[in-house]
Image (cartoon, rainbow over all chains, first blue to last red; front, side, top):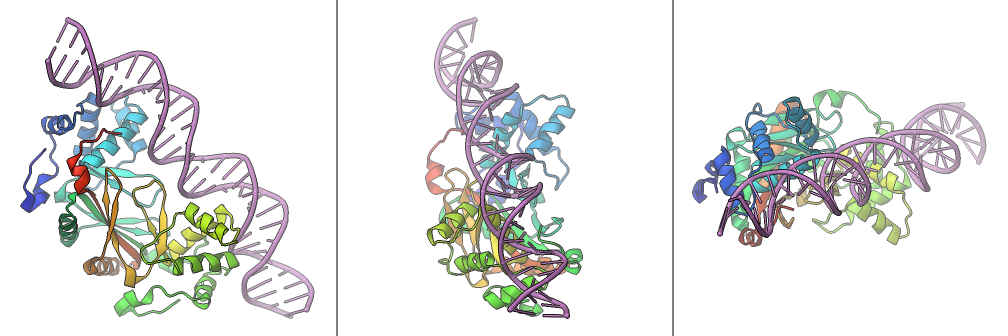
Length: 163
Length: 163
DNA sequence: CCCTAATTCAGACTTATTCTCAATAAGGCT
DNA sequence: AGCCTTATTGAGAATAAGTCTGAATTAGGG
């Protein structure tokens, strides 16, 4: 476990080192593999707000000389999302994106349902609502995302066909 | 267009009748077909908080004697989501769910990442944040959803394998 | 250093969703 | 009421994200 401060859980997320990741994995009887370290490293060094699909990650790793199989990538990002290390984003495309889950860069998405253009925005209240709600139900919060579906200014002006 | 009260867009959603749906479709050069009417009818008469997958909808329609093809169902729910009539939900399963988009029943989801148990909750502030944010960017709001990923009390007690 | 069980890899497989195209029908026009 | 254009439907093929399988590997405890 990284840190445990129930009064201010926000501080308890993120900043995984090799050691803290190892500890958290071992707590559950799991192992720290080179693949998991490398993948975590990629996400921790990704520019703020940048997110990757499984395929993106696969290509990026390959370009850096790491030959990690696609199945391992899918399993690892899912595992890390379930641990709260990564956020699983459902943006406009038909596949998931992942990014590191750090409160400092915590943000949300405003998506145009017609052209898929996406704007990131921050809002401090959202995290508070998520915190309050999960506490109330006895859940341990990992991540909360506000996703807004809307029509962007440019698409409001044009009449598009259905598909 | 149903209603247009920019100061309080919340009142502008929902309560589609055959006529208002027709008008909104025609506005864009689209048509009102029996299939679209029937599907809208299903969603409008669904119990509050209930949501359907495309497959669910297909089966439900069939059980009521309506033989609407799966492709039409997929196309129609997508169309209605893009019009703001339906909300497209990304819950725990690997397929989308749809429900009518009515402010009165507007709610959000708290999902356990381990067992997928999902709790619905309401929060008035979320809609306000969505409204404010989309206005600020000049977007026309259709829907906003707060999705909380967390670990439920029961799963906090058990140590589960990765997959 | 050994042993057990978790993990990886490659590729087959599953399944939600989209695409294609011929047939149908909505709705504007006369 | 009938015609014409073009959106829409239906059936099934196609696509692609993600999962599963089983043999080989390896992390980490003893």
